Length: 150
Image 1 (cartoon, rainbow, N blue to C red):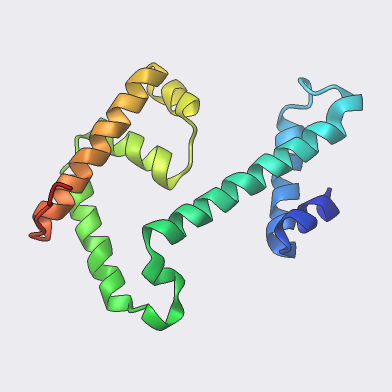
Image 2 (spheres, rainbow, N blue to C red):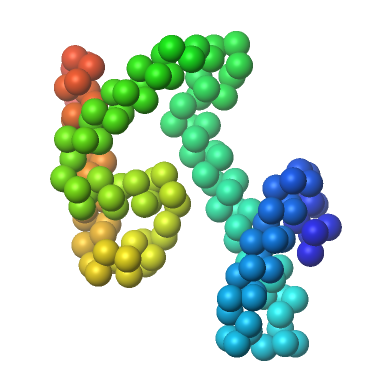
């Protein structure tokens, strides 16, 4: 399993983390997984964890490309961006903020968010859409940025 994860990531530390997380998941669900299918189940869990990790890292690079390049990194600007985002997030209703953070920051799936909040999946997608729109408006307003229609 470790070799599979290393081949996929080319990073020993993240591969080891993925294998350990998969083994913990197997331990918590040992009654649901058949013994002869455990290895395939573990490989599938490891693969999904590594894909999710890759997507999170890619999303971070897309959202903030200036942080991905060391020569452009300015810690002061990062703090200002963080403060502006915190102010914009604080203007959202509690439910919108919670769902937005669960999806975009923590990487939960729509079904998981629906289970945690007691909502339906279509309700979660609608709230998430409105939360992103309102967050964008609040951020632009706080920074006195005019939004132009294209």
